Length: 335
Image 1: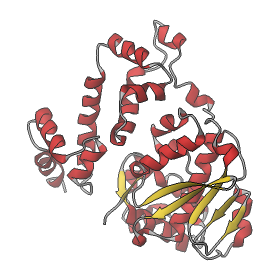
Image 2 (image 1 turned 90 degrees about the vertical axis):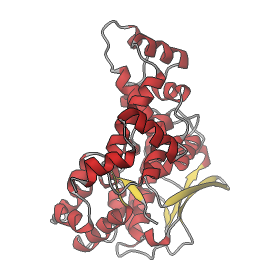
Image 3 (image 1 turned 60 degrees about the vertical axis):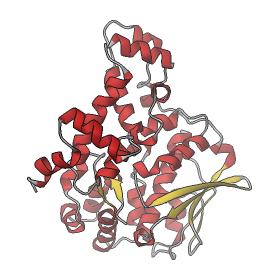
């Protein structure tokens, strides 16, 4: 089964590889990743290519914890506009639940299981396809989760414990313990991170730069707009489309305003929720169709359609041709 991951996962890859004196362009090309793909974090790349890029870096950089280093470069911002949705949840546990529910929008091939255990919550990473399991992937995933948890909490904290399926790496456990500030277990039954219940039940700490993106009454009342509200709505819809929860209430939640105020804002802009979501879908459809590795069914799901037939019918209404016809004319011809 073919799986995909957003190009955002490779943010920091080139920087780390160069720090070891190696050429990231050559490694990415050898792995099958076109460097220009990394310019757009929303581009989807093959999971096999991502894992191959990790393995090549591990070998060429002589660093068997490369996945960990790359994971520590990740943040909640790499999740795109979904981060706003997570920040508006009632607790970090609920935010992690949202991540669990929509992780496939960021990366396929694994799922999360969040279960209480004593005074902690265990966040376990289940590899859905064993052919996609590598020690580098596990390191990357747990390190990225650690960073996301830390950012949601608002300050650096030591988690309770982390467990890895992999054997003890050459750098031994101290290398891991220094970076995560907790005990480590290798040769474990699962890849998991254990988070203190007292911290997980806290409300996410919205950082100052995210607070500036919310729409206060004062900003909305200014005659000279200081924030492009339409663009913010556009980006939020784009991030929520495939979740099945793209509605005015959740868009307002991400913006930090009441749904009625969102409706008034749309009215002032002489537009509607339906018009904007149609515009987003049209533009995203064209963008996704230019990625030939994505099937039409997958594109339909990412646009929030439950069936390919509905997507195809709407696409033909927009562009007077089916998605496959558009792709044949504009993508396959170029290839």
